[in-house]
Image 1 (cartoon, rainbow, N blue to C red):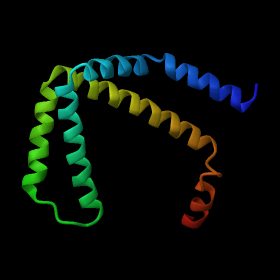
Image 2 (image 1 turned 90 degrees about the vertical axis):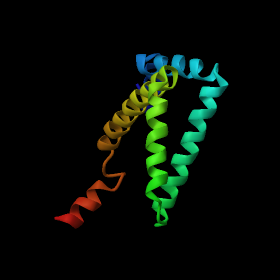
Image 3 (image 1 turned 45 degrees about the vertical axis):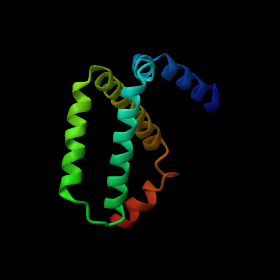
Length: 120
């Protein structure tokens, strides 16, 4: 079996996984309520802006970070949003683990061999 066949097999397994199915179900529930969707999108936009400011070395007022923490607490109390965020996290965690596994298998291509030589 070729590498491409295995990739398609993995793609089918991912699409059939409980994590992906739960994510789709929770996403559909979220999209049915425009208010919840807008609240989450606004929060993510603000969170992204805060992270970009930090990356660029800009000073971020403590009040802004605290406000985002408060908004996140409110979002987490909303069952539809909380279920979506939980499902999204589980799917993301699974995808990260798969990427780690694949990356470890082709570490030389990813530069691990060169980095390890320079460290030792």
